[in-house]
Amino acid sequence: MKKFNIVDLHCDTLMELYLKHQTLENATGHINLEKLKKGGSMVQSFAIFIPTHQSAESSGVTEDPYSYFCHVADVFDREMAAYSDVIRPVTTVEQMRKNAQEGKLSALLTVEDGVAVDGKIERVQEFYDRGVRMIALTWNYENSIGYPNSSDPEKHMLGLKPFGLEVIAKMDELGMVIDTSHLSEGGFWDIVKHGKKPFVASHSCARALCDHRRNLTDEQLRALGEKGGVCGVNFYDNFLHEPEDGYTTVEDIVRHAKYIADKAGIDAVALGSDFDGISSKLEFGDFGGMGMVVDALAKSFSSADVDKICHGNALRVFEEVIG
Image (cartoon, rainbow, N blue to C red):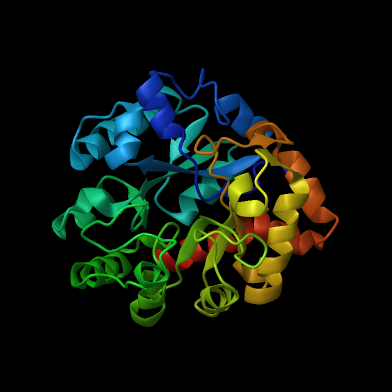
């Protein structure tokens, strides 16, 4: 396995660090510095997941979404400063490649749930200035941008709100990746129609293989591929197979990668682990075991296509969108 070759589009590690008062050195979840190095990380996307409603209640979060964003962004900045000899924040692909050449890990700051934008378009610029380069427009609740995925077919087809269309236009203008994971299908199709650049489903799987509303239909996968975007395969067993059993195998991940490649094209397949945001027991343990995932992919894909899945496709989207 090559060193520094994994681009992972999504993890929730920052929330773990913030709520448990841990650091990237001593974190006890799926990701810490040693596990990133052992698993061959090139770029780890660190999401600021913003808990609201029941999620905030269960996590003991009492801050408003914007304040929470600011505090967790401070944690990211603190960690980057503390471990700059190992990992560096990035906002361009050139920086990612330079870090890899110098044996350093790269950290890309993202946001999961645009709730903190709160109807204020200037906050998109503020997030960009803070280093954010990707925003998942919704989580599991309605916000000022749009609506989440839903088991109710009518609600699932609700599109972006007028303000949401402003947000995606601003993101395209600035160079921020639009992330559709958790978004309603209606919102997804609005991005296909109105978005100017490739977009991603950072941590989603194929609906045909696991009938969960968070997963993408064949039609969505084809459209994503046609727009030049990528789908990051999520490692959560609930999205990988039925019935859910709390366990994820490397073959589960490969099965979805093969299906997405078949429907959307090989250039649309990427990795979006959802590390530290999922409860599945993983056959490969944590990020340190990513070599098992790469080896399993190599049994079904050519070496060139494994490289595309592990980093090439994601880097292409980043280059086209953020520069």
